[in-house]
Image (cartoon, rainbow, N blue to C red; front, side, top):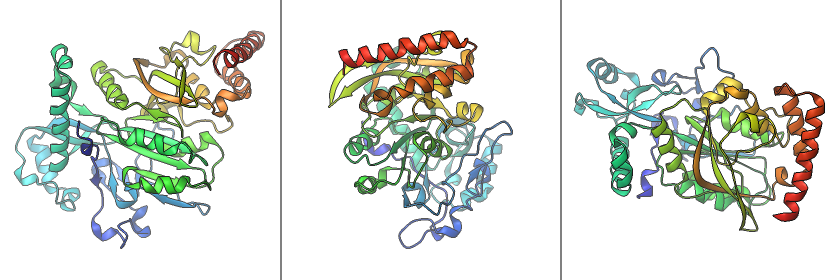
Length: 408
């Protein structure tokens, strides 16, 4: 499959807003307005019930070391859906200020037919996509049909590939030069064409920034600045995520090549309102697979222990808007606490595939503190009595020691 289609960039601002290096001038950076997409002053206008605002850029920070990526050049990614260009939409598109600044959309030549549309943050198709994006998406769909004929026998491809959700991958790193490049390569080489990649660096001093800058033309947004830990950094990534779905891939973790294509197919096949989708992952130590981990999310099991592979799993952006961001008071088990918040009302899907590999030398795999934080999360979100929680804590610690003895 042609990886060049993995560039569904859409320019939101005219060249007059760019400086001589091709980046957005500071005086325009926080003043981007696109009414059709509900973007006002470089922020998406939130719904009343949303717990936070989605931003095009992180707020100014006097301690920021560096910032870059395609967004700083005015290039953005969105979700796409097929929709009929009816008379009213044709008239609106033809007269819109948005299109007046974007010569790539030849609205005069469009006919009344079903075409791809750019979606707003709520997933509503609102703007006809430019011709080059129409062609790239149609090229992907046709290749997908040719390369997966068995898929088309069982399903109507027209009905399934009627949308192309944007998947945002967030990598948080601090002095991770040893493994980061492999992680970046695994994301930018995905066969799925609509992937947004965000890297949040905590102020590395080991060459990490050199690696990020090397791949800057494939990274949508990156920033390097001090943070308060992994969950603070993850929150920064979520705040600037535009994708329908958000995943977290640490430095040293990698996606297998077809991972996001499989996730996307799963999403479109099910046509459901999942808030969270997990899969299986390989656990590695020194590049050797120790074991495979990950099961279907089930609240009765999950409230006892983390039985899903959080690495590389997908979270609906609606989920974060509903329950809020990660609690930065947690240092290791914040992902577990987040998924406990909706209790048994979390609608979770399971992709029965191995999609990623994870290095097991991270803090959550080598610190016993994770179990005490998990205890705090359970106490906050479950109705178990303290005695039972202490028993579970003891068993979890014992199991952890045995696992390290047998597998690590």
